[in-house]
Length: 105
Image (cartoon, rainbow, N blue to C red; front, side, top):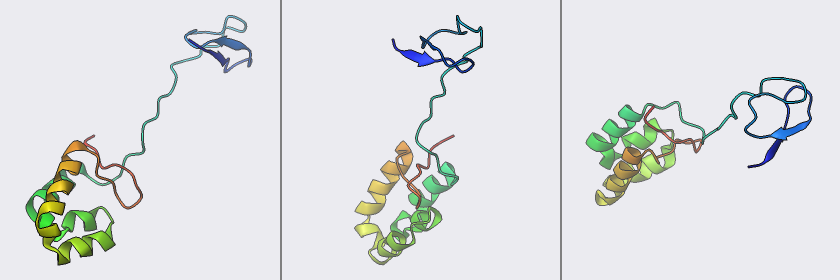
C-alpha cells in the first residue's frame, strides 16, 4: 500500500483513506482508466466481418481504407485474413483507424 496526496490540503495520506486525517476532505475512489474505446459499434463490425469479411467491408467501416482495399482485392487473404479479423473482432481486440479498440459496451 502506498501513499498519495490529499485532494484538499495536499498533505501525504494513505491511499486507502476515505477522508484526509488532516483536513477531513473526502478522497473518493481512485479513477481507473482503461484503453480508449472506439465510437464504432461492435455488433456492426462483427456482422460485417462475419458476412462480408472477405471483401474487407468491416475495415472500411473501422476507417482502415488502405487495408480494406488490400483485403478486398485479395478476397480477405483467401479467407485467412478475414478469419483472423473475425477472431480479433469477437475478442474485442480489433481497432479502428485511430488505434482505439472496438469493444462490446
